[in-house]
Length: 75
Image (tube, rainbow, N blue to C red; front, side, top):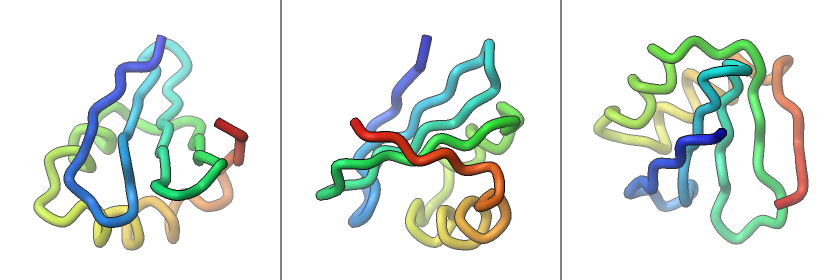
């Protein structure tokens, strides 16, 4: 089961985490696709949703670091 958190962001609608599969889901605004990142520690998810600037955190810590773990899926 994915636990979703709605965030205050210009780019991202909500962020989800599946504790069983250790997969993080990022639902991008105005996009039919969302990103799923495999093998993400829960601590990174928590840091992401608690960050002061969600968009900057996503760009610096998620897109650039976890890009090779990304799986694109259609909503």
